[in-house]
Structures are given as structure tokens and as C-alpha cells.
Amino acid sequence: MTDATFEIRMQVMWNRLISVVEEQAMTLLRTAFSTSVREAGDLSAGVFDPEGRMLAQAVTGTPGHVNTMAEAVLHFIAEIGRENMFAGDTYVTNDPWKGTGHLHDITMVSPSFKGDTLVGFFACTAHVVDVGGRGFGADGKSVYEEGIQIPIMKFAERGVVNGFLVQMLRANVREANQVVGDFYSLAACNEVGHRRLIAMMDEIRLDTLDTLGAFIFSRTDTAVKARIAALPRGAWSNTLLTDGYDSPVKLACTVTIGDTVNVDFAGSDPQSRYGINVPVIYTKAYASYALKCVVAPDIPNNWASLEPFTVSSPVNILNAERPAPVSVRHVIGHMVPDLVLGALAQALPGRVLAEGAAALWNIHMSVRPVAGQSGGRAEILMFNSGGMGARPALDGLSATAFPSGVMTMPIEATEQTGPVVIWRKELRPDSGGDGQYRGGLGQEIEIEPLPGHEFDFSAMFDRVGHGAKGRDGGGAGAAGVVALDDGTKFNPKGWQHVPAGRRLKLSLPGGGGYGDPARRDPLARANDISKGYVSK
Image (cartoon, rainbow, N blue to C red; front, side, top):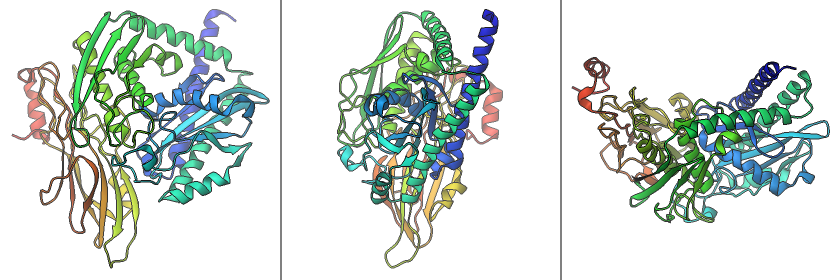
């Protein structure tokens, strides 16, 4: 086989591998019970070599899941032990420090055997609607209050499901059918990946993935290191203020570029008393994502593409230690890219977008009939997004989830899950920061319980007290607002109450603008006004 033929053959198989994990992810999307997975795509899927190194990830999924999963598989291998792995096994955990950062995310790993030979692993992650405890919110004072903890263990051995684990789940969660259903969906997702992989290996007569893995890693390593070599050498620092729970929280980082790129989070505020802390595995996931967006956005994500990016931090809010409460770690964790990109913008002027809404405006509603009334109860999780920051040559995207990449849930899907009505869901005029390129718009959302019902909701919002900053002279994005329809203001975090007959109004933050507003194209301004993005 000539060198050229070998290259072509390996590239074709690499593409086939990516199609395998994409079908793996699609299986989870199509079979999941929770709307957060089925409608929003809050999941990840990937294939790993026998050493636990990620070979390929599905395009569908979030950086917080994919990049933490890339590290989590190593924990599964270490704790289960190769001698205890059999064909038909599936392993599970929601350990925040060995999984994806909080208890609501379930990670499953399955070994893939070809005959008697272990050829790799499949892994997937999904956010489930409930894990018991206080519910999805920031009010817990330790991880023990936040729900059931599942250490790394077997969900199934040799194809036989652990019935005792299923019983424990049903006894500890509010939406047992949804949660247990999602566990089976996760296991099926890995099984589909395994079957497609073995079919591919049989077709092209591969006994192992060793040669293909070596090709993937060598080509990726060469490409990423070439990009890093082209960067300026030095260290750049940045700070960012977030709303925190009851007082602002300072995040700090220093990006140091050499042969590799390190992000150090020294100087960030200490751990919080509340569930906004971030395990370092999640911090690293989003720091790596931010770097990759600028340095190597077109290079496929795998073990070799992540290896040159490292993270260090003393114990603080971005490196929280057990048993810190971490339920809404995504709110602070989603600020990490803006923090890192702010430092990187100093090294690479003209190449980095402005700050955006960053954190998802997730809302968890616990709906029930008012006293003396009949009706249904439900736990409803709804994902919503503010505006992205403007880019160096383009306006910011409106109502778009950056950096998480999840989709906004359709209101029809949300209303089907429980007794609520979404009266309004539209773009928020004037919320994008002014600039040569305008920041993306946030949204206006109004939610009301059906007659005879009320609901408590868990606020998991940010950018209420600290709007997104513009870059290179661009204006700030509008801050968010959480209130009742009578104007009563709510806190941006914590469980709060919406009585029967009232509407919850969410005004989501916009993204910062980029460049001097005086340089904005007059036709672009006229278009903004004609479409209602900007008022006269």
C-alpha cells in the first residue's frame, strides 16, 4: 500500500468513525424521555480507544459534556478494572468530580469487544430532569443535599440490568419514569455505537483500532501544535464579575502560551456556600473549548486536540472540592469562555468576539394545584438562551446558546410536559450592545401556570447585575431582568414562588457589541430598526 493510499484509507475510516458516534448520539436524541435531551440536545457521545483516549465525538452535544466525558472514561477504567469488564457491560455515574460537574448529568460507559478482544469504549452523557434532593437549584449547602449520588458502578453486567440500582432510582426521584427511561436510552445509545463499530470493522477487516487511533492522534497533534506555534509567546490576564448567589463573584485567569497553552485560575473568589461552585473537570472543559474556538476551531475534537491545553488552579469557586454544592455549576462554568477569551483577546487583537449572555437561562418549575384544587403536578425544565457577543466582522447571534451549544426548547414541547402556558417568547429589542457589529439579542419570555395551579421555580440566571461587555469600543449588552407581571423583582438565583393567576417575566441579557458604533454601516442600522431589533 502506498503512502497516499494509506492516508486516504485512514481518512475514510476516520470519517466513518465520526458517523458511528453521530448515529450513537442520534439514538439518544430519538429515545430520550427528558425534553432537555430530546429537544435541547443536552448530551454527548463518543468513542474511545482501549486506553480511554477519545478517538472521536459526535457533532451533536455540548462542550461541557464532551470535554468532561473525555476525562471521565479514565476514571471508569481505573475503578471498574479491566479484569471486571465483560461484553454486554454498561457502567454509570453522576459523580460531579469524575463525571460532568453536577448530579443531574448521567454518564454511561460501555466496553466494546470484538470477539474476546477489547477494542474500545463508548461513552455518553445526558442531563436528566430530576435526581431528588432539593431539586435543580443553587440553594443546597453541600452536594449531599442536591440529590442521589451514584458512584462509578455497573448499570448492567453481561447484558443483565442492575435491578437494585433501578429500584434505588425510583425511590429517590420525583419523575421516576422519565429518569429510568433516560438510563435505558443512554445504555441503548452506547449499544448502537458498539454494533455500528463492529460492523465497520468487519467490513474493512480491522481487528483493532490501534492503527486508526495512531493516525488520528498523530495528525491531530501535528495540526494543533502547528497552530500553537504560530501564536505569540507570553502571559495575559483577565478578570470578570458575575452575579454570584447573594453577592458578586470575581473570576480571574492567566493564559500562558508556550509550546502548550495553560490557563491558571488563581485569583478567583473562594468556594461559595451555595450550589454555584464548579469542579475543575468542568472548568477545564470550557477553558479548553474557548482556546480551541480561537486556536483550532476546524480541527476535530479528540484526545490529541485537547492534550496541549492544560488548566491549573488553587481551590476556589472554579476548582471546588467535595462536598461543595455544585448543582448549577454551569452558570459560573459558562462564564469561563468569556473569561479566557478576554485574556486571549489581548494576545490576538481583532480575532476574539465580545462577551455574551454566556450562562443559559435554564428554569426548573415545580408545578402543583393550589390548595383545594384538583390538577396535575409536574417537574418542568426549560432551556433558554440570551444573545451572543458580536464578532470581529459579524453581528452577534440572537437567542443562541454560546458556549454550551444546546438548542432552545420549543414552547409546544414545554407546554406538553406540565400545566403551564408560555404566553410570550420573542426577541428582546435593544438588548444587543451597540457597535460596528451589534451584539445578539436576548429574549422576552412570559410563563403562567394553568388556572388552579401555582409553581415554584429555581432561578439559575446571571448577567442580571453584570451585563456582557463589548470589545474594542463596542457597547455593553443589556442586563437581564427576572420579575412578576406586576413588576415584583425576583433574585437571579434560588427557589422562588409564582402564585396562581400571575405570570413570570424573563428578560434575557444581550451580547456585547464589537468596534466603534460610529463605524456601523447605515444600511445595517436601518435594517435593525425595520426588523424591530433596535427601537427608533
